[in-house]
Every structure is written in structure tokens, then in C-alpha cells.
Image 1: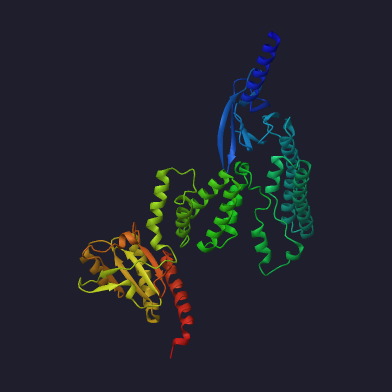
Image 2: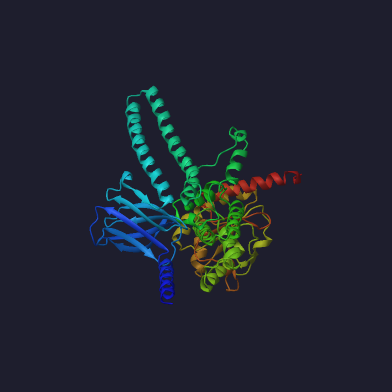
Length: 477
């Protein structure tokens, strides 16, 4: 009975030890002294997230140990002088050791008990060797260029290209050698898409379409660990900004397709980051009409309850903002206005203005930026008004006499209106929080462009007028 009890106690202790040691990573760092502190962190997109700290123990080791599994990804250990090395933590097998010295030389790095880090450091050593070779070749090329030795330059260019190919081949070889590791996923994620032979000489756009369609093929979008690498954020940014026309009609479907895929995969962290990045990036965009992307992200993600990380306050804020900007995003019919002219007697209704192109401008004669922009719009109006362009100029403040004086002095002969009796809701409808605000409307009063630089308004209006004239050329007698 006593032996049975002892055996049971031993098993329980072993089980407890197993639970308490879900990760146990030891570092032997030659050159550090006892008591010096190191930091454990991992990549999070293009930033680093600190996970833990530990000091050099009496055995000369730095040990990071805990009861929970670490999230997989590329990690760094930061030394007291803020130098660091990278290594890999896979989902499983989180008990291993790494040796290196404070020189951080690739030759000093060694992994014990970790296939992932054996592969990682094998490539690191090879890449370091090739890096030395590459620097030497580039130095030689610089000398050859200064000597105008074209033959030598051409030869060195071929050697440099070969080094790149060799590094790429080494990466591919390690993927084959360690196919089940997270390191293999990492190496695969930086490989470029292979274009079929039949498309390599294509000039019709099919090659580009193929590349864009297969852009994510080498990245495991089923693994949230890809977010904890230096790769995903750069891939996402390039995909959204370089492979798609920067217009809402191009960007929004691309966002939905990628986010829908991540959502269906159950990769919550990748989904969360992608939604967050797209929302913030396009909110900050200076390109015309891109607030339509923000409106879409708010309505179709936050307000639709898909953003599980967003609390009620953030969700309410996003939905409120979407409601404010919704009426004036590009593609919508501009909210109608009936405002008073300078006599306070006659009124002008925006939607009853018959014009192929109407420019709506909200401004204030005391606004410094307006004083710079309005003269440019006047010059544009004087040039294009004869072709049918009209300007509906809305004064947003209450200095009526000062406003009328400015109109007379600067010869603003377009439609000048204001809300003389405070009955209009235009400030809310157009979300007027600053001036000037400029909208270009088509013949149906649909918003086509908003807030372009004043010097570009005339160019855009001219294009719109030409399109209108081409569309209606058969209507002319």
C-alpha cells in the first residue's frame, strides 16, 4: 500500500511538473555576467511585444520558463546593451536551449533540442557568409564603375545575382529538409510567386492578374503565428497599396476577400490585425474618396459585430462616425440644400441647379486656408463656366457684411449662399468640421470627387465636362 501511494505521488508530481513547464527555454550566452537582465519579446507585425525578463543565474544561464505555452512565431532575446538575436518558438516543442556569445556572430549560434532553430541558425550562418561575399562584390563593382570597366561591371553583376540565387536556393533546400517546422513556413513566406512559363512574356496584364491572385499562396493564412514574424505586415501593405488601384471600388473587394478568408480560417489574430490595419491605413489616406473605405470597415465589420475585440464604446464610436460621413462618401447623391443668397430674399436649391458639373464649396472669408483656395477656384470658374460648370458656394459663419464685402471685392460671380435664418441642416449633412470643403458633383448631383487640392479642381472639372460632352454630343442640334 505504501509503495502504491508513493508511486501515485510521484506520478502526480511529474504531472504537476509537466503542467508547470509548458515552455522552458535556456540561453547560454558567453560574455554575460551573473545578474545581468535579458528581455524576451516576439514580433507583432512591425513591432516587438515584450513577454518576459530574466537574469543570468548562478549557472551562467538565462532561463525563460512558465506554465503556459508561448504563442508561436519569431522571438528575440535582448541583451543588456540592447543587442539581440532572433530565434523561433514553434507551437510544440517549447523546451530547448540556445547558445551564442555577445558578439552575436552567426558562427557562435547553436540550438539544442529544437529542429526549428537548427534550421533557422543553419540559414543564418549561410546568409552571413554570403553577405560577406556580397559586400566584397559590391565594393569591387564600385571600383569597376569608377574605372568605367564595363566588362568587369557586367561580370560582377552576374556574380551578385548568383549570390542572391544561392541564398534563395538555400532557403528552398531548408524548406524541403525541415518541411514540418514553423521555420519552413517562415522561409516559404518570403519566396516570390512563381509565374507559369506561358505568362512570363505576357504584356496584356494576365501575368499581373496571376501574381495578384496567387499573392498569398506561400503564406500560411491558417497560422496566426505568421503575425508574429517580420513578414505579414509588409506583405499586407504591399498587397493593399501596390497591387490594387487606390480607389474604394478596387480596395474594398480586396479587403473583403482577404478578411473573409481569415475569418473562415479561424485565424482570429490575423483577422483582427488585418481589419485594424485596413481601417487605420485608409482612414489616414490623403487620396480622394478613400473615406468610403473607412465607412465600409465601420459598417461591415465593427457595426456588424464581426470585431470581437472591440468593446461597446469603440463600436459605438465607429458606428457614429460612419453615420456622419455616410451621406457624403463618393458615389452618393449629395444632400440637398435650400439656402439664402446675399439679399436674404432669394433662395437657391442645390438639386435644382441644372449643370453638367456642380462644385459645392463650404468656406469662410476669415479662414486662412480658404483665402488661399478661393482665388484658385475663381480662376477655374472663370475658365469653365461657359461650358456649363456651376459653383454653389456656401458661407458657413455669421459675419454677413464681411462675407458680402469679400464677395464684391473678389468678384465671386458664382452662386453665393448662406443659412441666414439658421434653418438648414447642411453642417450635419455634410459633417462640416473645418473649411474649406469641396465636392464635385455630376449632372445628377452624385458626388464624384471630394476635397481635391484646389489646383487640381479645374483639371478634374475639365475631365468631367469632357465626359459629359462626349456622352451628350448626339443631343446637340
